[in-house]
Image (cartoon, rainbow, N blue to C red):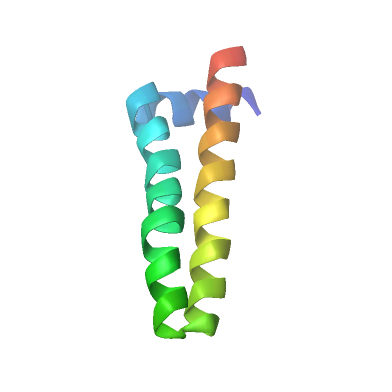
Length: 68
């Protein structure tokens, strides 16, 4: 596990992880309403799943790299 965290630390820095979470938030807040207004319900569901995943993964990676 520590080898994996070491590899992640070498690849990502704090700025990159924060950007991952912000991209998910931006997609959710900007693209979501546009898709809803145009009636693309299936695409809206996909965007929500991907956006929430980006946000959660970004937060988890940030916490893991801060603790270790």
